[in-house]
Amino acid sequence: MYHKLVLPLLFLSVSAFSAHAQNWVKQDLYGVASISFSGKPEAETEEALGTYSFLSENGLQYVVVQQMDMLKDLPESEIDNFYDGFVGGYLGSLGRESGNDVEVFKVGKYEGRTFTSTTTETVDYLHYHRVILIGDVIIVYNYALLEKENDAIRAEKDAFFNSFSVK
Image 1 (tube, rainbow, N blue to C red):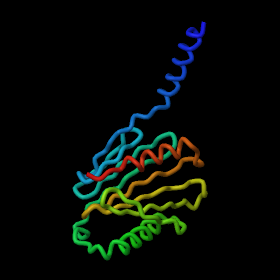
Image 2 (image 1 turned 90 degrees about the vertical axis):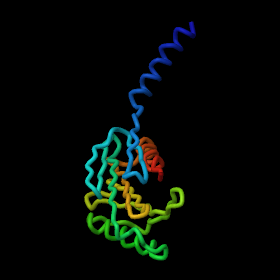
Image 3 (image 1 turned 135 degrees about the vertical axis):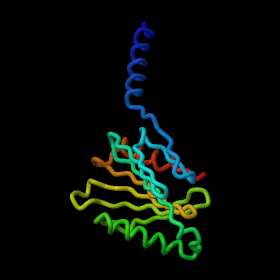
């Protein structure tokens, strides 16, 4: 009798999980890094600039990659100034505000910055940003919430950010 109940319940639970499972797609970022999107990203690439984006049910995942020769020889002593200027300029260009929430993160031997911003329309429209400089390539990867953060959104955002790796 139990096996008659267990099999249909098992089938329903596997079906429900499969319907919500995401097909993560790994994207190469100019040969220096990679990141996985929760679906196939749209890509626009030029010689020194690439943008990748995917809109899921939970949020917008987007990445901007830019190669800049002038950064190739940036002295180690100028890295903090570079990030301070980049974060301030990035937020200013978007017309967004950020608190004092800029933090350092590391991927391999590289150090980057993570920060948040909100749009002026509503505080619930929160954006998470990470920027990292790898040689002369700047990679900015972002996750924009489409609704108030919950466990599903947090899990997808964390999986997106944690999938980033340097080659």
